[in-house]
Image 1 (tube, rainbow, N blue to C red):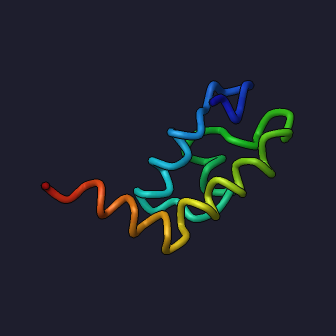
Image 2 (image 1 turned 60 degrees about the horizontal axis):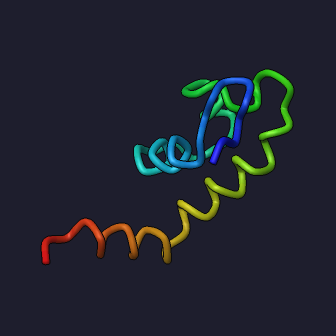
Amino acid sequence: MYVCVCHGVTDRDIREAAENGVSSVRQLGKELGVGTQCGRCASMARSILKETRSSDYLAMANLLASPA
């Protein structure tokens, strides 16, 4: 789903950035432009970052990435 319509950033883009070390909305703004135009996306982006950086998400991502 699109989170930042101004810059065409999706939830997948935010999750990928988080997996690559982005840990704040400020960093997302620098990397993807999130929250730098109208700002309506900032709270949703923050929620996705928080969810992605959680241990449950990381455990699931690692499980899915391991070979069967």
